[in-house]
Image 1: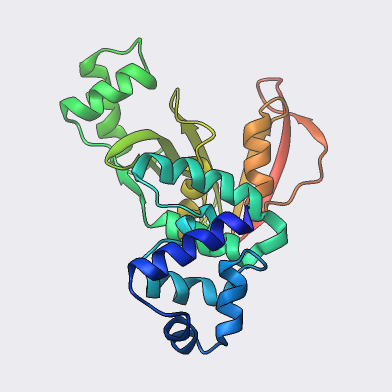
Image 2: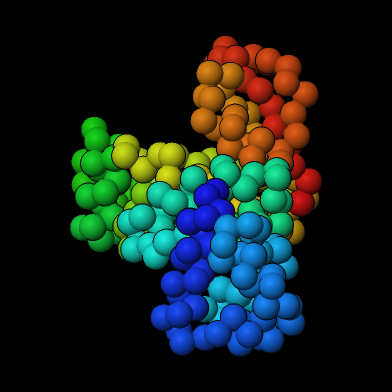
Length: 252
């Protein structure tokens, strides 16, 4: 993150709002010197002040960390960059950004209409007929697979379906989450946000453990599971298909 750029941005927004440094300082319960320090790029707002500051200035946490106004397209691009930038160094800031970003992400069931069927046929199952996809959506929405809970969600960003997310019950306490992002939708933060959304759903449904088998060559998925704090012994196992997999677990 560029502190000078962030400082210049904060100053510009403050002036745009016709606020003095004293007004900002009094609203946040800090000194004018601290506000001046931010605006000159000599320091960043403490994490505990970021959300109140953003609410006061009418900006998002992502815009604060980016040091610029963001339209919808650039919001997602910058969010992923900022999630990487703050990382372990600013864990609480990362939580703020994820929380804000999660509000823009929607998980919903697929609908047997032309739009969803067309999206699935294009990105998920190109060799299936429209009738077969329609039936598949109906099967998904029954929430049952061989007598166990199963649910398939569309991952939606800005009203566009960007991937799928599935929940599959192994037992009353254990569940797995499967995420597949469509072509052109990777490396934009969608996987991180969708996984956090999925973990919320798993908790609400009363599951205690999320269990994952990740192919050893699926580097992106391995990075994602480390990012959302899954645990693993890093041992490579063979699954039933003979593939090399790494096991990940997370207590809810």
